[in-house]
Length: 404
Image 1: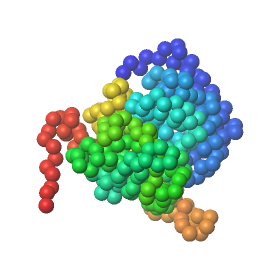
Image 2: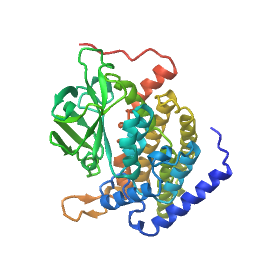
Image 3: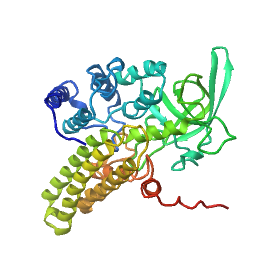
Image 4: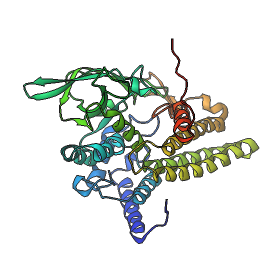
């Protein structure tokens, strides 16, 4: 990837930095740095207003064509913005699933009608999205999904009727739409007979149950579909051809925002380093070496991300994207462990009691440790990522299947 910045790129950086600085020290100063790991429930309404302010200024969905609310920004400009966003302390995005996952998927695989209907409202922050992939018996083995959809005729035309259960549906409690993998032909092999449907969340036939996490919050949910409906035309790609679309979505998940992610991790390391300097653990050779190794690891993460981005043009999941996910997830988990090790015995003490008196308030290091346990699971567990690398990148035989 060519990292030479043009005059237009430099001007883009100046514009982004100035806008973010003005907004995050002005009307939106209260959301600065909020909504991160273990903090995702906080200030939701304020962060939704922030999302819509970003959209109004066309700082969301940067790669989208202008007609859909984007800027048609280059990949390098997207990298610039996400780095500036992290540097400015931008809050956790409530529209990240729309911008980072379903938006690029519809742009790449959808129809003109679907692009016109959905993309502008994603870019503006008017509609929020969640992902309906995993099921109780189909997590890493995604092809084992059992949620089914049938095309039926109704008074308003043909509709898909959906029945089944999804789990780990992030942000479902706030979402307007969900993209759902459903089995639409149960007579075909596992990877076939799957369709990729766009389903409105605010309807009868959908129940959302929160999953309480180690952090005490519940970003994740179980979502039950009991006769939920969506219009016949709300299928992305071919009917029974949803597996290819689903893999495209996973490729987009490893997009340009990962460069901002790397800078966010660097901010976390800087905070850990300040604590180590203050409490004296920075003078311990082992701790000092761990901090140095983490600094080096973050540079490797950046270059791995850039290499992955250069291979993303096809919208297909590649060995490069799998390598990058495995790397940053393991790195971030180790960063959480370093955070509490630097605190020492103080890491065993909560910061206080929650306002309702029902639970303890965790400190930043404690939230980081607990949250990062999930990094190596969601979006494809480390074990599955290693299988993908072995089979697709190294050409090794598939993992043996256990049969009863």
